[in-house]
Picture 1 (tube, rainbow, N blue to C red):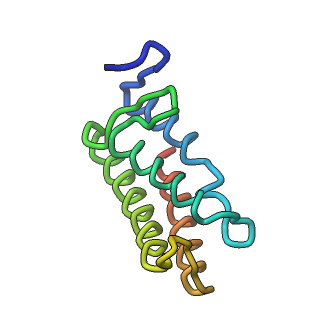
Picture 2: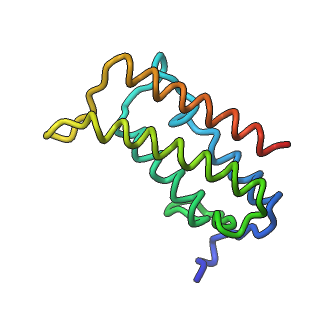
Length: 128
Protein backbone atom coordinates (compact mmCIF):
# COMPACT_ATOMS: atom_id res chain seq x y z
CA UNK A 1 0.00 0.00 0.00
CA UNK A 2 1.37 3.38 -1.03
CA UNK A 3 1.30 6.43 1.16
CA UNK A 4 -0.91 9.23 -0.20
CA UNK A 5 2.25 11.34 -0.46
CA UNK A 6 3.89 8.76 -2.72
CA UNK A 7 3.78 9.16 -6.48
CA UNK A 8 4.05 5.95 -8.51
CA UNK A 9 5.57 5.65 -11.98
CA UNK A 10 4.61 2.57 -13.98
CA UNK A 11 5.97 2.94 -17.51
CA UNK A 12 9.55 1.95 -18.41
CA UNK A 13 10.31 5.45 -19.72
CA UNK A 14 9.00 7.32 -16.66
CA UNK A 15 10.61 4.87 -14.24
CA UNK A 16 13.98 5.03 -16.02
CA UNK A 17 13.90 8.84 -16.11
CA UNK A 18 13.30 8.97 -12.37
CA UNK A 19 15.86 6.27 -11.68
CA UNK A 20 18.50 8.16 -13.69
CA UNK A 21 17.83 11.23 -11.56
CA UNK A 22 18.05 9.12 -8.41
CA UNK A 23 21.33 7.53 -9.55
CA UNK A 24 22.88 10.94 -10.23
CA UNK A 25 23.92 11.25 -6.60
CA UNK A 26 27.12 12.12 -4.82
CA UNK A 27 27.53 8.54 -3.59
CA UNK A 28 28.15 7.47 -7.16
CA UNK A 29 29.37 10.65 -8.81
CA UNK A 30 32.18 11.48 -6.37
CA UNK A 31 35.36 9.59 -7.03
CA UNK A 32 38.09 9.15 -4.43
CA UNK A 33 39.53 12.62 -4.95
CA UNK A 34 36.15 14.07 -3.86
CA UNK A 35 34.69 11.20 -1.84
CA UNK A 36 34.11 11.98 1.79
CA UNK A 37 32.73 9.43 4.17
CA UNK A 38 32.73 5.88 2.80
CA UNK A 39 30.23 4.86 5.48
CA UNK A 40 27.70 7.34 4.08
CA UNK A 41 28.51 6.21 0.54
CA UNK A 42 27.84 2.62 1.62
CA UNK A 43 24.44 3.50 3.11
CA UNK A 44 23.49 5.53 0.06
CA UNK A 45 24.46 2.71 -2.31
CA UNK A 46 22.37 0.26 -0.29
CA UNK A 47 19.38 2.58 -0.86
CA UNK A 48 20.14 2.83 -4.58
CA UNK A 49 20.28 -0.96 -4.81
CA UNK A 50 16.96 -1.29 -2.99
CA UNK A 51 15.38 1.33 -5.26
CA UNK A 52 16.49 -0.61 -8.36
CA UNK A 53 15.33 -3.98 -7.03
CA UNK A 54 12.06 -3.06 -5.34
CA UNK A 55 11.14 0.27 -6.91
CA UNK A 56 10.88 2.15 -3.64
CA UNK A 57 13.08 3.39 -0.86
CA UNK A 58 12.20 4.86 2.52
CA UNK A 59 12.16 8.63 2.53
CA UNK A 60 11.84 9.01 -1.24
CA UNK A 61 8.34 9.98 -2.38
CA UNK A 62 8.37 8.37 -5.82
CA UNK A 63 8.08 4.66 -6.52
CA UNK A 64 9.09 3.10 -9.81
CA UNK A 65 8.71 -0.32 -11.34
CA UNK A 66 10.71 -3.04 -9.57
CA UNK A 67 13.51 -4.58 -11.62
CA UNK A 68 11.51 -7.68 -12.52
CA UNK A 69 8.85 -5.66 -14.40
CA UNK A 70 11.06 -3.89 -16.96
CA UNK A 71 11.37 -5.03 -20.54
CA UNK A 72 14.49 -7.01 -21.47
CA UNK A 73 17.00 -4.31 -22.49
CA UNK A 74 16.49 -1.92 -19.55
CA UNK A 75 16.29 -4.90 -17.19
CA UNK A 76 19.71 -6.15 -18.34
CA UNK A 77 21.26 -2.69 -17.90
CA UNK A 78 19.67 -2.22 -14.47
CA UNK A 79 20.86 -5.66 -13.41
CA UNK A 80 24.40 -4.71 -14.51
CA UNK A 81 24.18 -1.49 -12.45
CA UNK A 82 22.94 -3.42 -9.42
CA UNK A 83 25.79 -5.94 -9.78
CA UNK A 84 28.40 -3.17 -9.82
CA UNK A 85 26.85 -1.56 -6.75
CA UNK A 86 27.03 -4.97 -5.05
CA UNK A 87 30.71 -5.19 -6.03
CA UNK A 88 31.39 -1.79 -4.42
CA UNK A 89 29.57 -2.85 -1.25
CA UNK A 90 31.57 -6.10 -1.20
CA UNK A 91 34.88 -4.23 -1.44
CA UNK A 92 33.83 -2.08 1.52
CA UNK A 93 32.69 -5.12 3.52
CA UNK A 94 35.99 -6.93 2.93
CA UNK A 95 37.89 -3.91 4.29
CA UNK A 96 35.73 -3.19 7.31
CA UNK A 97 37.59 -3.33 10.61
CA UNK A 98 36.25 -4.97 13.75
CA UNK A 99 35.15 -1.54 14.94
CA UNK A 100 33.08 -1.12 11.75
CA UNK A 101 35.31 1.46 10.05
CA UNK A 102 36.07 0.97 6.35
CA UNK A 103 39.83 1.17 5.71
CA UNK A 104 40.99 0.74 2.14
CA UNK A 105 44.19 1.25 0.19
CA UNK A 106 44.65 2.93 -3.17
CA UNK A 107 44.02 -0.31 -5.05
CA UNK A 108 40.54 -0.71 -3.52
CA UNK A 109 39.74 2.98 -3.96
CA UNK A 110 40.70 2.70 -7.64
CA UNK A 111 38.51 -0.41 -8.02
CA UNK A 112 35.55 1.51 -6.56
CA UNK A 113 36.18 4.45 -8.91
CA UNK A 114 36.28 2.11 -11.90
CA UNK A 115 32.98 0.54 -10.85
CA UNK A 116 31.38 3.96 -10.40
CA UNK A 117 32.58 4.98 -13.87
CA UNK A 118 31.06 1.79 -15.30
CA UNK A 119 27.78 2.55 -13.52
CA UNK A 120 27.60 6.00 -15.11
CA UNK A 121 28.28 4.51 -18.54
CA UNK A 122 25.41 2.10 -17.95
CA UNK A 123 23.20 4.99 -16.81
CA UNK A 124 23.99 6.74 -20.11
CA UNK A 125 23.04 3.50 -21.91
CA UNK A 126 19.62 3.69 -20.23
CA UNK A 127 19.02 6.98 -22.05
CA UNK A 128 19.42 5.35 -25.46
